Structure formats: structure tokens, C-alpha cells
Image 1 (cartoon, one colour):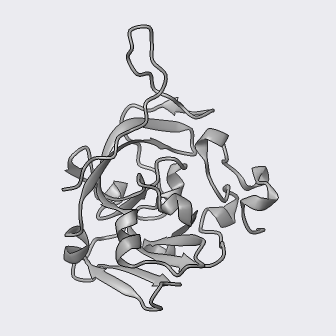
Image 2 (cartoon, one colour):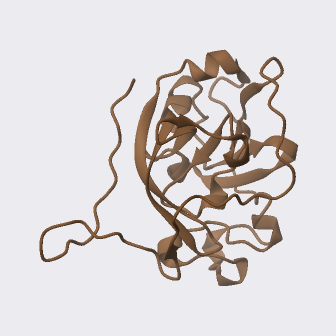
Length: 215
């Protein structure tokens, strides 16, 4: 098991205790609401496969079945989850496989700038390669030491703590390396192409020209 990647601390009160930091417009959520679009997929381990494809360094496709993928090095990250619907869940411990591990095993070509994370039912979310490569980006299988439930993304969801939660899809099945940006499911439907909660990048009308491709 890998070493945990800690959470950055916020401001401290007069007694030195860390105070939670919230992005603008967010409120603290007790518990974990279920939010997603469409039905919950049925997990069939014998059919499950994780793929890395697109502009890979060797030009090939890399695949793992469920047993192989979950045998990759495991680590934990303590991180907040900020939903674009304005709730924030603070201090969860996520366990799983670092995105950097996938980049090491199946490296992208030198000219890759973005990735598309693909999930069940053709759902997708685009990320800058630098966001995907963060040491805190994780393909999560567990939360607080327990397996994820189906409603929360079992067997695999992406956690990108420094972006809004829609950038980390549930029920992930693969990653496509891209040499140019392309909008994912929600980004095509009016959500911000980058999704930084600290800049309150919620919707596409807030975008600057350099934030992404046109709609």
C-alpha cells in the first residue's frame, strides 16, 4: 500500500486548529448526496475492462481486467469534494490507484495535452494533462476505508480534488490521450471547460478564450 497524500491545510483559529476552506459559493455538506445523470450501471466483473488508448507513446492500446487493475499500487488521498450544485464534502479519505501510475505504465505521446476520461454509457469528461497528472488525482475504489457503493461509482470513479466533482466521473472505464482539447459530456452542455471551484468556473459563459474549444 502506498503512502497517503495529505490534504492541504487552511487557515487556523486562535487555538491553532485548522479551519475548513470552502471555494466561493459552496456550503458544507453533512453526508454524501447521490448525484448523477442516468441509471446506475450493473457491474459485471467478467466483462469489465479499463483501457488507455489514443495518442499513447507506443501507439498501442493498454488494457486491464478488474482483477489486474485493482492489483495496481494502492494509495490514499485525504481531500474535499466540491460539487457544482454548491455542496462541499470535506476531509474524505479516498483510496485507489493514482492517475500518475497509469501515466507511468502507459505513458502518453510527447505532444499529448489533454485526456478524455470515459465512463459507462459513453459519459466523458475532458481534463488538461496537468490536472490528470496531479499527485492527488486518483482512480478511487474506496472512501473512508470502505468500497464505493454502486450509487457513488463502484467499481471505479475519478477523484480530482482541485476541480469540481463532475470532472471526476463515476463508473470509469478508460482514458483517451489527446493532442488537442475536446469537450466532454457536461462541457458540451454548458458547463465550464476547466471547472476550478476556487475561481468558481461553473458555466461555459464564464470562459475566457484560452479556457477551451468553442461550443
